[in-house]
Length: 366
Ligand SMILES: Cc1ncc(COP(=O)(O)O)c(C=O)c1O
Image (cartoon, rainbow, N blue to C red; front, top):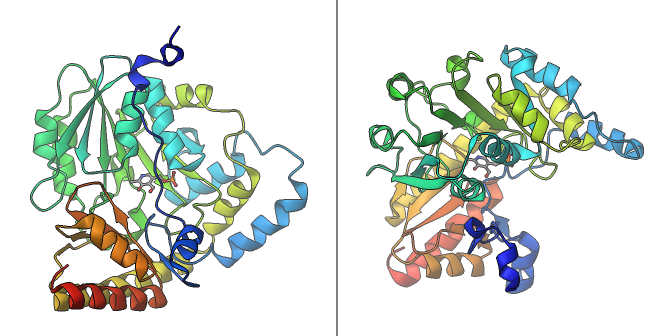
């Protein structure tokens, strides 16, 4: 027997998720001591002081399994957001939540609608469970085209992923746009609203997904501690899920899917709200300065509601390599004529601007 026949046919040709380059790889490749890792939309500084202290304190107790019910963190999150604890799922990053939701609802032949380009995990989990990908192009402003997404819904649509703000373009859709959309989505379709960058958004027209969550309607709101809370390395995300989806997800998840360090780190991070406000402010300042440099250098970009910016370039592979040589790790997306660049610290910004200056200076364009 051809051994590849062992593998489920719908997984044929699936490739592992390719993460952004790691700083250590780039240090090795370029011989530079310092690099700016701006490729994975992480926050550039470590977790909050309280979180670090609490995580360090549990290290001697890691002989024990974590709390499989994630009780304390769920209670803390429920109080923080004013939503009942019984609607909460905490997972190994919000990535795991997206996958568990897909696993719980998708059957072969189902259709999954999502915008494109958007978060790469949506097509991955769609294929994983034998469903069909329905990718709807972003509009001319790199925003979700919600009317086109609605038009793509059929009787076979089971799931719609909405990414607000959108990764990789940093754009949002508004409260009014979401309300029109939700009112028109047929009831056989589950809407998953992925709000991984929720905490970075300033815009008054941005909808808080929880406002639409009532535990009944087929709506999931997913969030994470990986971004503004700087806990990407311990993997902890969460979501609000209606019954009976929550029960299904709880039944199929691994018994101890959220480790102890992650649980306490997330719990104590929530106590550091002034720090979250400060981080949002710093991110906005750095981003504004970057915009002024993009404008000066004639680099076309999409104004972003997040901690990353989508830059237009006709030669993404070359520019990616040039940035790398200057110690800046951006993210490219194959032939898509764009690069995604994270917003970092003041030092990262200075390194980025120096790199852009030298690239545009040499080439005359970006
Ligand atoms: C839109 C979006 N959703 C979800 C995630 C997953 O984050 P995590 O699994 O770290 O919570 C990411 C990470 O980059 C993201 O960009």
